[in-house]
Length: 217
Image 1 (cartoon, one colour):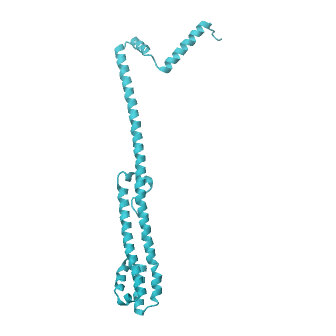
Image 2 (image 1 turned 90 degrees about the horizontal axis):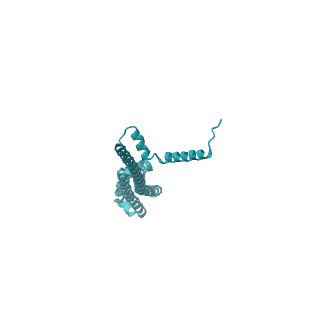
Image 3 (image 1 turned 135 degrees about the vertical axis):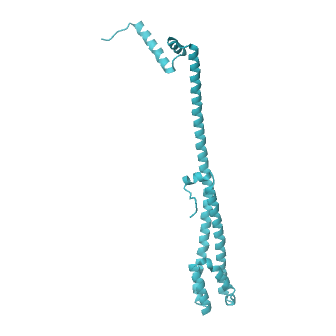
């Protein structure tokens, strides 16, 4: 059977419940805490000192948490800035490598385009000149790095110097060899610059994340 309260008592109970709820939500009043401590024989002065120490410890922990958050934010910011900076540096250096590699390939292709002209011209000259041109063609196909020396040798031959078509073609081959040497030198310099930057700190930390190679293959 339900216990019934008169209206006045019910109102008092409700008010007390509200007060207890408010105390629970806002914390225990210090006076209540001191009264409880006094009942247990604790000196109120010691209680107040304990409260002060606890509050200071809580404040220190709060400051530490804030410092950790700030430090974490700074580190994340620095990491992102390093990613942007490293991408800019590596992208520029890598673009140079690709550009000069393409230049080397272009001048090599230009030299290779001269071979059919040499082959056609070799059918129109004397047997001795044909043998020399065929030797040059073989060198250009198999060991083009040695072609420059052979071209210089042929250019010193009076028979080649006096033949306008041969002389002009030798000049083109010699010019292509010079351009290849120049572009290859520029390419190797670009590779060296890229690899140097890829090893630098803090770029070397961001490079693997950005997907750039450590060395140029």
